[in-house]
Image (cartoon, rainbow, N blue to C red; front, side):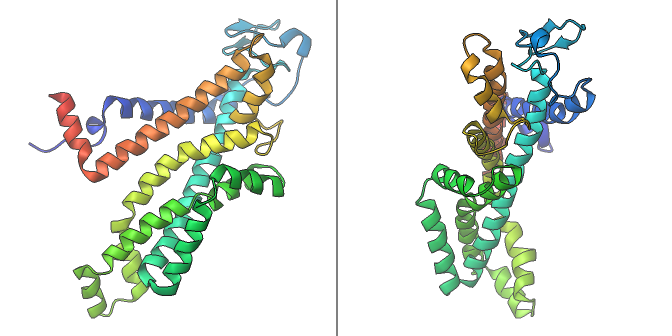
Length: 291
């Protein structure tokens, strides 16, 4: 019998994670586009301020998650914030993985002084807590989306670089690399076409796991006022804007907070599932679950 693949090999938590992230991504794209009111505009504050979830305003507009202190629809703003937070998290994680892949591949392939310098730089940056680096970098430059993405990429490449360096260094002594050299294949072509495809698996897993971490770090910076700046919404600055309302209007902070938790947990579950799949443990687990 042909072994099953794809969706059927995922366990239940991984399937729920895919559904959750897919729903969040679809909502982040579609909800702001279909909204009848501008989620950044401030309207009739007195009449619409802090409406509870499932309430209607005086004009008959329905607010699924209520409104904030300025009368803006919380659900629409949360989905718009998801568009920004998810984009920043994914882009920051992908750029960090790309930087780490380039540095690790060059270090593992060339060895010698390049290897020592690259790994020394990675170890030096790893010795400083990432949150401290993020706070320092965010404080030095103008807060905003571009700054957050650059800072996430510049502080997240080290782990990927070390993994890729290890995989590439091990691949250098394999027979197919020696055969490619004997046939006159250029060194960079051998690295790009034959070595990296066999070493990229751990980097893909690290990138998936890094998305949740990047979204959390971006939200932390925005919560502290060093990330995405209002009126542009981010889950972090939405939580910060509702922290003083946690007793009188808890939905203002709880809604983006729960969405942030779901996103981070789902990304972590998917990263773990991908790691198990690459190591050959996922099919065994799926068979055990069906048994």
